[in-house]
Length: 219
Image (cartoon, rainbow, N blue to C red; front, top):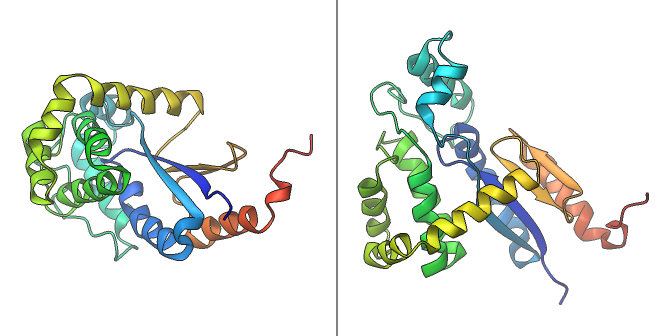
């Protein structure tokens, strides 16, 4: 059996476009099964939300304007519901705590379970307006899906989770990842970024899997 196609998937848990893309991730994994290996990696987009709002949204309504933008962005996608009050009252100061716990879950319970946790965190914020910038809230959500918070705390305290997260952030910079979500495949030769439709993702994966002999650059 040939090796699976590696897809590095970069996102930020507070990014609405990654929340919208979640359905496409599910469809890709259902369609291709063990022919692909999706590696979930995280990037520093909402690491400092307050500064991001000041620099990019101060003249466009601040948090209220950004919340309206998020609602309008998600409106066409019924599989990515967003609460009307998004970003209005609950304003996570950072995505880093969520990313940190997700990386701890990956180390302790495996990639698949950590991906489930990431999805639950996104749902908690976008649908239920839970402040996933607060570490206790993130650990509470982990506990609800049978990810032992005590195991996670050990990895948080000994620095292993932080090291794994810093590795992701560095890889995002090294690979010139411009935003969330970003798919990188074919040893970095193919990069898909932003609100990429399922058919485009499918076509790219299918082409690489069906023509592996063409993976090498022609240059």
